[in-house]
Image (tube, rainbow, N blue to C red; front, side):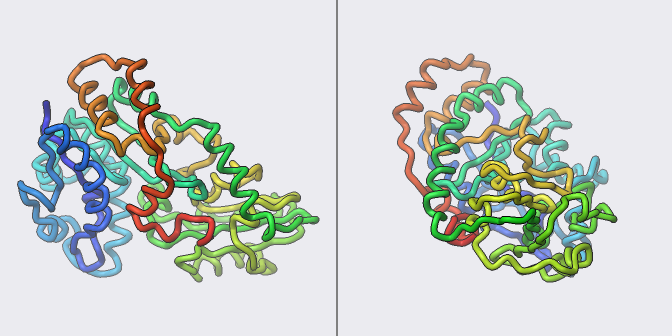
Length: 355
């Protein structure tokens, strides 16, 4: 069996061209707790042998520290190919490995596939108001994708959590009597904004026609952890009469009336749709409830905490057909613990109380 490598987005550096280790640390702890119990050789890039010099790698990729690194990262994120030198460095990292990534970039996933490698890519799903976060998982191995789908989140859970949120927000909602439009802001520089090698904004593409929504009242709601005033200014350029939405985002989503949301690519747009509202996404890379992007991802709520999940994954990669009945029995024995992933990430942005 191939060695296992755990990593994050290897292309993402701080502006000072130093490594961003936080996501890799908590994510690797989550995976290692199972792979080590199964006796599987597992490396964490930059944190366990063989050691990897991120600082040297970033200096070769970005050449110079500074604010331009962010835009350069966005270009690399969607790159169709890499230079010969960079490809050689990436080959040394990924060749002969089964790669488990947290938020791997689209270019790195393409590269792993191009050298015949296997990846399992984890992202935090866009459903944030539930009793825990969920992972959405993709892989380039069709047989493995089928196995992961056997652990897929049940729609009944989403329905239950929707009812629970409406109950929580009941005292904070209002009735929007006139057609209303709410713009949802995002954290600047986040990977979710990247499309075609650059960060999307409300002004890309040019010429967003607010009148198409037929709204009498227009609002804007910045992200709770990043005001991003430049984006709000752009929004108000399209709609000078836009007012700050002085209520929690989830309370608005649970409110009644003719209400439409607009966002560049925020997962909050997906949540608005789950709660029964229309949402317009500016970026083609989005989590629309009806979008094509979902076809390559499987939502998994908690089974990845258990060694049985990973044992099935790696047995599949070794060619053993999955025993679907045994998987169903194992799932029934796995206990769901609310907020477990949320606490592992320490995700302050990911709860109804924050938004």
